[in-house]
Length: 202
Length: 202
Image (cartoon, rainbow over all chains, first blue to last red; front, side, top):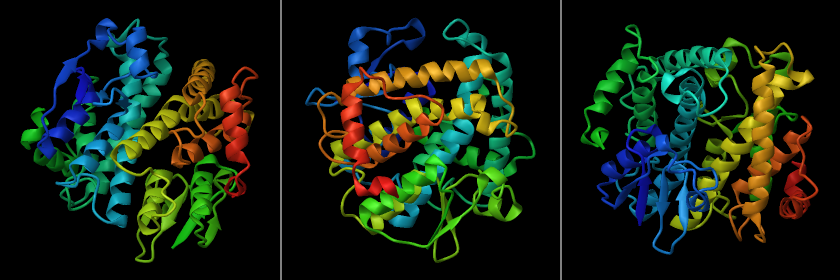
């Protein structure tokens, strides 16, 4: 297998942190999406969506979507379980992973696409839409702070892919100046806990 | 358990079709989100995102996000498998389910929110953004038609949650006048196949 990656992008980092938590080492090839190295016919054959990361399997087929790649490795290397254990916990992990993706990660991505100087010229931008999404992302941070409460991790007592998603989201959000607020102490404690794990450097 | 549902909305339908495919019957309670029956403190305690569907478990806890609820029932009622079997197939189902959600379902949802007369007055609308998303949804239909090729189902040879997601998306898209185009014969054949299953009436 081989992972197509771009170190600076938030989505491929989710897979790198997941692999680090599993203790899995695989070959990694960089694809510079800021220089449009993904906008080639060869790349679109690997992933018609044109996005990273992509996992190349030994049979020559390709898997994309970060969570799908993580799911593959959860099945081939079940321990430590990062998608939860048992029906209720697996469902709670899926719920939190998606809630963070939809309510916070997606708005942060829209802010990056519509407002960041870095993304200028890549696609049509609508400033007003970016501003609405900035408010949505801030509301998402506040919701998450309340939800974490005194829990150790996003989905409860066990570290999971929902923590990895949230870690990558928080660090990406900082690049568009969306930050954990001083009053969001639950989120701040969670962030200190998760970003001190060796996997966060992956 | 009990499912909070709104028959007209596309997301709760994903769970109803999934349950029908599994042969699971549970109590269902309607929540009229068009009349804001979800915008109450009691409802936000069940789901801080304020969305449907929600599954109430017998221990009084609540699960939201359609796919998380489906995941719960996949674990409690494993057959027929609707999330794939084995590492590669499970990953392919996850990939296709997410690809359809992100590349087509999300744009269709934005078209509904920003352009449909039905959604007027519910949130701030940006017509220009709606038009961009309409193009994205159309491009998604074309991508999907190419990807299906001669396959029986979205993720390959086995019916899966990716087919349920796509069925609910295609029927929802019709309400904002986004349709399978005459030249998209693969998608049309797939749609005829899947919408003829009894579960599609759920």
